Image 1: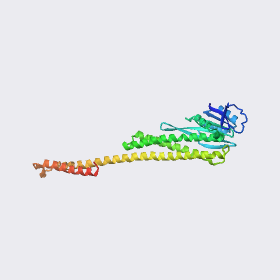
Image 2: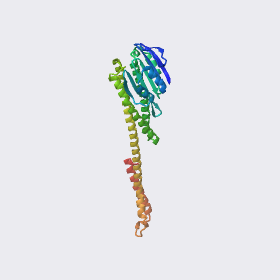
Image 3: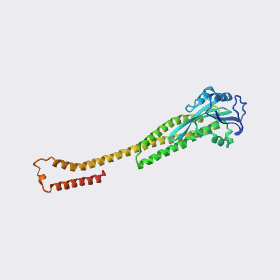
Image 4: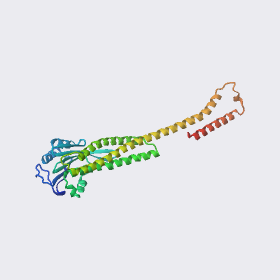
Length: 321
């Protein structure tokens, strides 16, 4: 187990380190313990279970590391699971943060998260007046920290898609670029499936009567819910942009093929004139007076050139050539 931090806070101010032992002194009013760990083993979570009286089912879920976002109530404690996400190339990589919340403790267990909570802890400690509200305010801070990580990821994806959109105005998309759009589209669809449960979790914390969440903390969760809705709107718009990029590329390809088809049809019509005339005089019948005409060959060439020139001018004027 990597213990990132384990501190006792009194009235919003950090006081002392708290060793992870099986017996913890009875906490006083105005104090709480905030423990942050990453990728614990079963034995280490068992120690935390005894130390803070965590529920066995919640501990099992926290050890699993593959839960959907949810809020569970176990007596006077809350167990919250949120999904972290970060961009790895064009792929969205997911992590998980499980949070145990009690009246005098908060334990965060991170799996696969690329962002440490150290910056969040430093930020919260700069506002002891707010941190004095207790573990529910820390819970809000962690969820807000996770949701804030979604926005730059979506903006980066959006920039990549808009870059492809600019490209199709210059040249057609290559097969690899089309495959890239579909890969990103699959990532966005999967991310939408995460945003739905996340929105439900934050909505419950902001509107329901839950243990360890004071009425004063609910407006903070409602604010996070607004951030989530903004992200959901951006993701929905991003999915539409991806669809429009592919459709625009498809339309441009059809237009290019139509242009080539018209050009081929125009040249075929022009070449049909000399082909037809040559075919007529290539039949070699005996009773064909034109074959013995002194200047017949030159007359036929002039007729062919004139007809071909007229057809070329007509097709040119129609935009086919």
